[in-house]
Image (cartoon, rainbow, N blue to C red; front, side, top):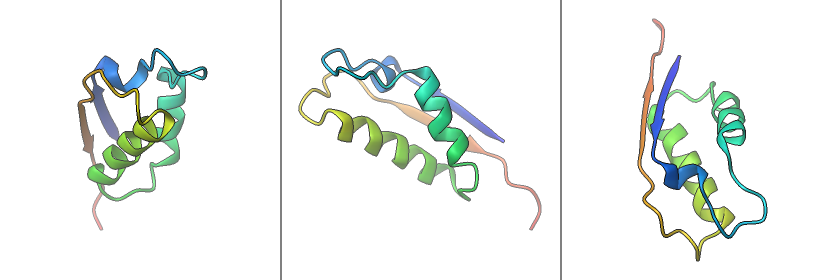
Amino acid sequence: EVLLRYTDGVTEQRRQPQLFDEAQLGRLVRNMLSARHADAVAQLILDTVVDLNPREVRDDIALVVARVIGPR
């Protein structure tokens, strides 16, 4: 289980031709479900947003990721 909270700076890249929208964010998180730590999910999201348009990151980017891991 993953809980993700984020600001609009994650999904709104105004000058990027291909927007990183909620659907793409959802796919990215679902692909990371094997990650053991919430910080790995958060770092991948941040890296993806910045890599898409490194010069145009002007809006706030805030992430809160919580991950529930079952017993080992």
